[in-house]
Image (tube, rainbow, N blue to C red; front, side, top):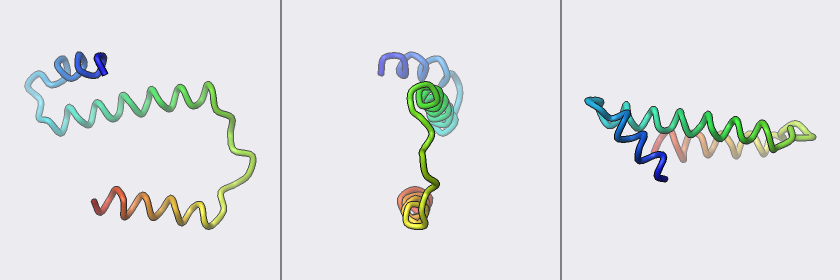
Amino acid sequence: MAFGVVLTKKWSDGQSPIVTTSWQLIAGGILLAAITILFEPLPAHAPSIGNLAGYAYLTFFGTALA
């Protein structure tokens, strides 16, 4: 949290809030992706149709339309 606050102050210098938020989300996503690659194994099975349908529902109705 403290690191995010410091970066927000640094990155928001003259930028719009949407640009600052975008950079925060990109930095957080890269950090989480790197940690996931290091500590989580790849799935043993391919996703089922139900898994893909659930992911599509969360993507479109929970994120895109919101």
